[in-house]
Length: 132
Image (cartoon, rainbow, N blue to C red; front, side, top):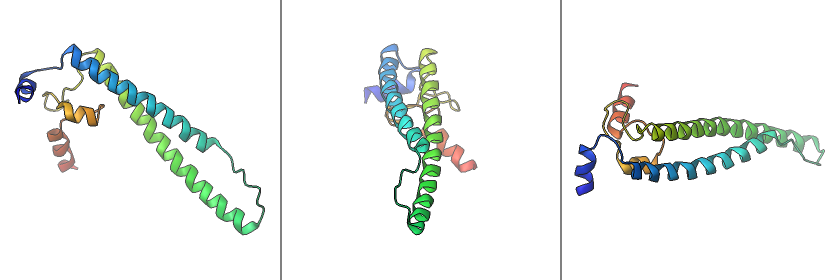
């Protein structure tokens, strides 16, 4: 309870809290880069089927194209996620991390632990979604 009251009065997170978030983001960033590497390998890999039956080959190539398109889309999303995490690290260095860019209030720790690259509080995000 004390932390909730304290959070609402604070204008930014302490250096210790920022260090905690930095560690979390670095972990997520390392995993995201590994995932991206796997996606890029899947996109780059060719069709290695030895089966030459025409029907089988057509079905397999269709599946391979779809899979490559899906992997490409996932890779693009992963690149965006990595960029967002890198931007969050910059905000930590600038000591502006965790401050909602709309309301100027601190984003709750629970939200930042779930979405460490968040720049909007839940309230601001919901208002943004209502306008769309």
